[in-house]
Image 1 (cartoon, one colour):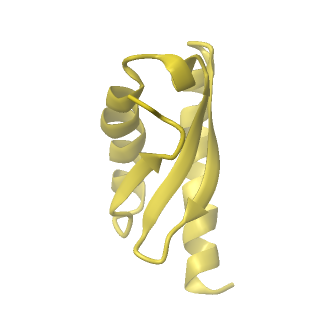
Image 2 (tube, one colour):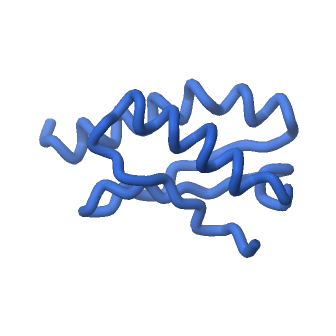
Length: 83
């Protein structure tokens, strides 16, 4: 397994740990890609996709958890948020 595959595996593992919290509020999260500069792109789904607090959830919750677990990650971006 190369380094990129290992990082993706770790990213998906963190997402799986976060998912129940988002689902408890009617939302969900989907991994889209890991860019070459270690930015994780995700889609926020369900209630998370339309909630005005989704950016705060993404940065304060998802991104912080991701960076704590995987220091190589620079940021987490939702590719489907329009606010």
